[in-house]
Length: 227
Image 1 (cartoon, rainbow, N blue to C red):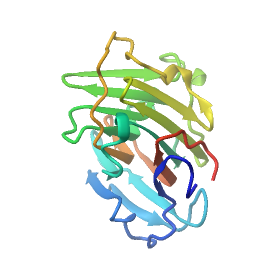
Image 2: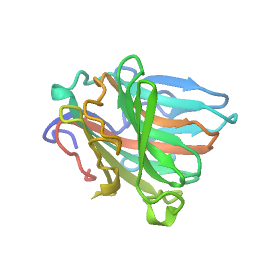
Image 3: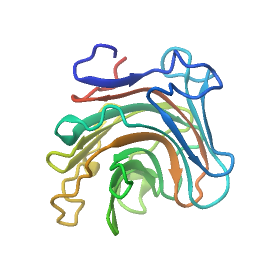
Image 4: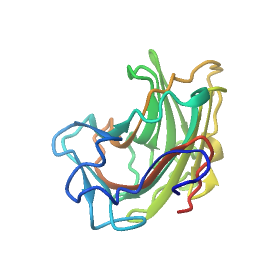
């Protein structure tokens, strides 16, 4: 991945110390919730020998365990691609949770990628309103995109703020149900002015999981699932 065309941020966490935080020059920890924690792990990796371990277990209700970056924002044309390899211990639950996203500096507008009703979903936070699109029909999780517990998955998204568009890919294949320009609500100018991005686990209905993140990248062109 180093030297890839359009690459703006790339971290395989190999230079970080096991048990410590990811590189402080790029990442800031934002942990709200009992038992939630983030650290570099030497027992699981998509490539190399290290990854970022996110302990997303704890009390019921809202819990946020994230590592965030303000690099490389503001992005040119307010548009960028994000890619992460993610390993979930438990898989996707029924409740609503986020794996990664990007948004405004004041947290009033954001686009999040996560799960709801056992399937991959995308979520827009717009002042006073929230919108969602699912990768499968509501109540039919077998028809949506799901994590396999204990397996590394490649998840990508294109945050196209210039044209108010979102696209997503799972293990290299586009998730067409998550491709949206209006959130099925006739929205036109909905994109945040993107100021930061984040990865980790944020849950709104008390879901419990442990996750590993590796080979995270942000760029001006689609990054794909290669090394």
